[in-house]
Length: 276
Image (cartoon, rainbow, N blue to C red):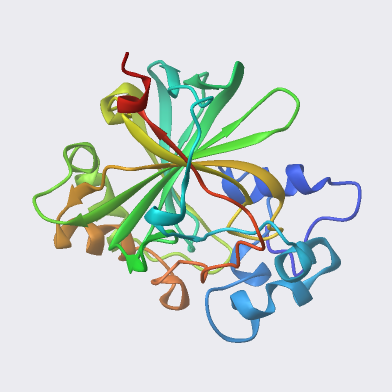
């Protein structure tokens, strides 16, 4: 299973993103040999690890970013996020650099400006990758979607310390199992979750921020549509520790540093602006 370098050129950037961000198969790369969150393979060096990762250093539309609320632009043309999620078999996966839920069946879609993006997986970063007004939150959930043409859209939710999150509570026992497992650097932990309903994490999004960015792991593919919830959710310290426990030591803080906007504008959708 181990692979010292990324897949050869016959893989497109999108294909490699999916190898990194979807459940591994017997031929998937050993992620921990590809990149890390510290040291020689940390974020500052991602762009130099492989030619396929060059966008991590040369890209001009990279993620994550700091959202300065008084500098966002209200866009009256933005539409609500239309989510048509459905129950599907899922697997809890610890690949060493994050913990995620991967759907083995059609889990539905999100509709963005008339285009459907299928839900593939969701994973957490601790602490958050995106910031709001310079505040880095304890955790960030990212829901990864892909359209038929390969386009990527991500919905992100930020968490602050408070009472436990109800959805994470439903998998907390499984997280505990992963935290007790000992995996080598060429292994992943897979735990079946059975049928999960993504609607259980759905909340009506009255306010979100939109910008065009990139994946936050190599190859840092651009043209990703980011949608960050304006409402910060609640999470307990115990739940954050449960999300961090199974990860490699150099990936416990699995966030990419902030990237420059390079002239990009962050747009704001606010339901109140649609009121007659």
